[in-house]
Amino acid sequence: MSEQKKSGSEKLWGGRFAEGTAASVEAFSASIHYDSRLYKYDIAGSKAHATMLADRGILNAEELALIVEGLSAIEQEIEAGSFEFKRELEDIHMNIEKALVDRIGPAGAKLHSARSRNDQIALDFKMYLRDQCDIIAALLDDVRRSFVLLGRKYLGNFMPGYTHLQRAQPVQISHHMLAYFEMFGRDKERLLDCRKRLNLSPLGCAAMAGTGLPIDREQVAESLGFDGVTANSMDTSGDRDFAIEFTSCCTMIQLHLSRLSEELVLWSSQEFSFVDISDKFCTGSSIMPQKKNPDIPELIRGKSGRVVGSLMSLITLVKGLPLTYNRDLQEDKEPVFDTVDTVSASLSIMAELLENLQFNTKVMEEATRTGFITATDLADYLVVKDVPFREAHGIVGRSVAYCLDKGCELYELTVEELQQFSPVIEKDVFEVLSVEGSVNSRISTGGTGLKRVEEAVLNAEKQMGISK
Image (cartoon, rainbow, N blue to C red; front, side, top):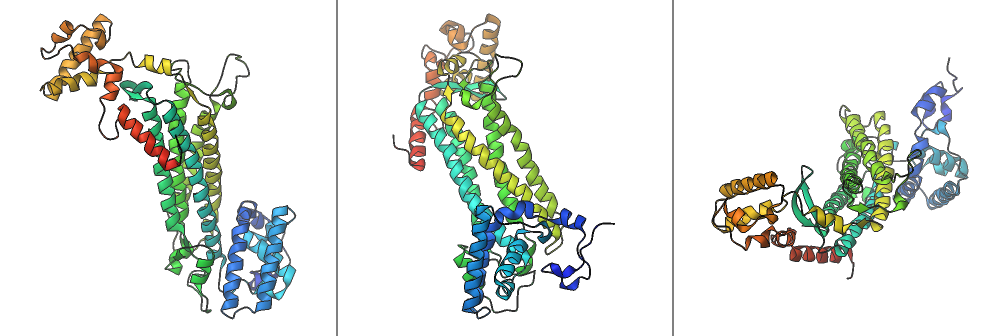
């Protein structure tokens, strides 16, 4: 039989219980081993709550002073590493409250008036995620700044653009880098938009129905930097939309990091040799001495699985829960904490890697000389000559087939050979068949033409506060 405590009254909630909690239950249900990271938010929320209770006459000035002083001392002990977290007290809230009561006596027992652990944990969690939104947004800017610097550095250098991982059309390296600048920019926008939605204070909703005590929820919200308070106590008690949305935003970030990592892995291979990843971000083989492995991009790509898994965990967690709070929701924090740690570390090290990344421009430009990469430009040339596009498409396709039989590229054909397929082709065709001519002809907004990319780099530099 499992070991039992003699009295349930040792728990702060134990007055109704004749027996103590089984040791196995305490071990199974405790969350203090991971939610202890919320301590500073729990303490800040408690101080704001206590101040409001005093302003409303529920605490007197002496009790408020004792509570604030006691909470500050506990926070100092936690930061110094001298505070003892006890598993039998279950979570961060009860550990801090019990320590406060032990320290200051009856005044500490009044702190929990007009609140429940249900709205308390929602408050702590929201404050934590609010900070993480800001931290990850700053890390995203570090990565985006790296793309802008690469865009400026490699302006005017060409590379193959791909569809289906087949050479498609020539583009500027800078254009490719700014594609990721835009991608991670959307990630930042999503994250900050998520921050707006989660920045409503849940405190004062109590267990699920509100409280009959004369509290001022708006005062607490304002003092803690919230934009307002939640509107419905039942929704607030069981809501984890904010955690799911945050994790969804982080999942998108990690997926974009994974796509970038995939390209870096491919480009650093001998088959591509497009980039040189600094030795500082690679490792060797324990058996093959010649190897230089792109471990960091591979690990970032691999870590996308755990972030996606965390999102799926949260979605599955809430899908069958009735209103309002259910203990299942204790399982919300570990996936979020792991997501925060994984995404933050991935962004941080990717920014470092990009700062040290070198492109092999000669190899990349040479790669644009094969694969009929300016075939679309020939079709566009024919369209300008009043040939319907579908007819032009067929003409170019037959020209490519001819080149394949001959073993050459389109730009290596003579005008006479090209005229076999269309009499409208003239000597000026070679202007569009060159890589430089192809790239610079893409003058549409968002295109890879030199003028457009120069404008895009300049705009990105302005966004990031980078001076030329």
